[in-house]
Image (cartoon, rainbow, N blue to C red; front, side, top):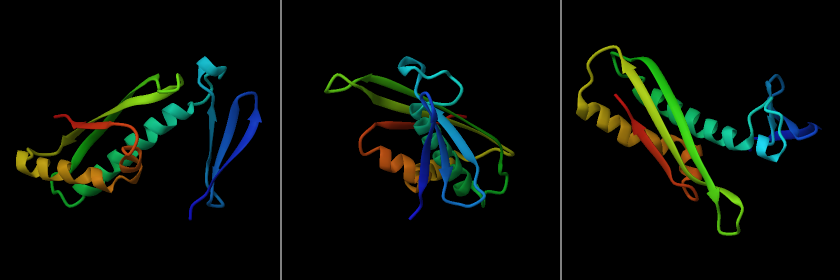
Length: 140
């Protein structure tokens, strides 16, 4: 089992540490709407970053044996928050756009096989999808 620890460090900011002895630390704070100062990402942005990084790394792993390789890979995550059933803010949707740049021409069939397959290996996205729609697009 993995562990993440959070320590309140003042006002509306937390320090996050991970279960490895020499691991780095991150800060997270409340969104500006809730009094955060904008010094660190808020939990909504951290969730978006977790989904985007998990999908991007999963795609990279699925492309590993591909000879031309990827020269560049850029990902953008956009999300919408709306009022939920109880009048509280909730994620309405998360849209992920991944743009790989390949070192050679890629056959459409190969790209389709990779893109149909890589998402199921992303633990974060597949878990979040149980409650929030996550839409993924690979752009050329």
